[in-house]
Image (cartoon, rainbow over all chains, first blue to last red; front, side, top):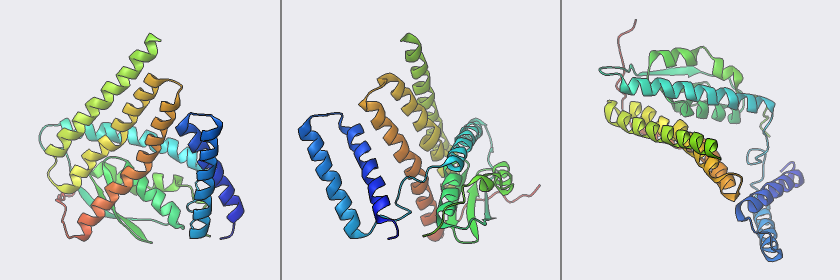
Length: 162
Length: 103
């Protein structure tokens, strides 16, 4: 617990925004109920010692936004490719399973990378360890694309394990 | 606004067609792992197009905030669940049908 106050505060702000966005009722009674439940959640989270850097939801920064932009473009391209393969008559796929070496340092970047691979249709990460990711891909092209390492180079890496 | 209406219906219909395409893919592909890729279509672009179309339908309201929250939830949970399925199948010893011929 290195930053209990800062993290608790930002968790509280996010919960408050969530409450206001979900309820849409701004009477004093409802606001008091919301405040009470937020304080209860903060107290329980503090007691359980679950507010750490990984659960702390506000690491959104410029490299991550750039990665999301790149990822959404890739998702659209891959979707079109897979739909074309579905409607191509005859044998349209050439499934591959391979070990993709990875050099990302922190657990969080590894998870972001593996999730991005899975989110892109045509590639699914099957197994994940410190040195490599086992990937199943629908085609040789998707395999070559991943092996070129373009996606890996864009995964934000400045998270520190604390 | 008639224009927003038209665009939102284009999004919703495109999402529906992608859902059908994903369903056909699940039946067409030969084994468990390749079927996961077809499911990936319905997970990603289909759901996103639906949600964008629905946000346009509701306009600026509380319902749009809720739809955005659904999008965020799907964005994080659908790859996690796909990975969990693939990992479980792999650890359980299910062998994928692979394309052997190298070119």
